[in-house]
Amino acid sequence: MRSGRVRLDRAVVQGFYDRMRAVAPAAYGAMERDRAGDPGRAFRDTACGRLAASLDAAGLRALGMWAHHWCVRFYDDDTRVGLRLVREVAGRRGLGWTADEVRWMLGESEAAGRAAAHRFVLPLAAAAELPSGALPEWGDGVTELPRLLAG
Image (cartoon, rainbow, N blue to C red; front, side, top):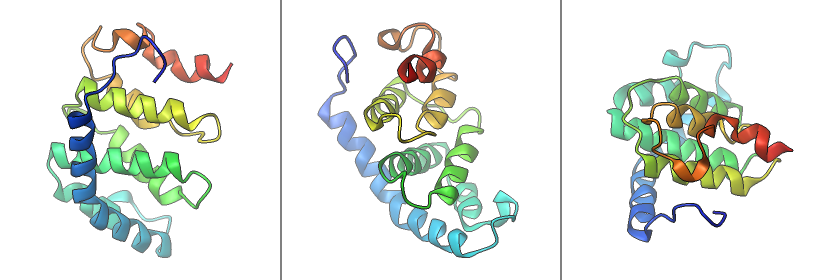
């Protein structure tokens, strides 16, 4: 992250990776099944939708963080299924996002650069659920990030 930003403790970040690693096999399998399936199906009827429905709020946050991480890092692959999953998780309210989770996703998104067009979908939705001032290092207008970084 840029200077002036809160650095996340290594143990916290490792905890994120551990949680994401726990959902990754099921998430990857669901995405592969959906990639081979009918793209017009309602989300709840897809493998990703069934996986998301089976998880509690913490599990859904981990799934969203994993899908966000996967889509940001591999944006040049066929990520339509992953992006749909990210958008679905971003649309869920009341998941209990933490400031550290949002900081991590924002940092990942910023580091991805402009090539990953959808890199702010989930972190901005999660940031909107945080109390005002929870991310002072990103400024009051955290939702302005995509515009600021683009120009």
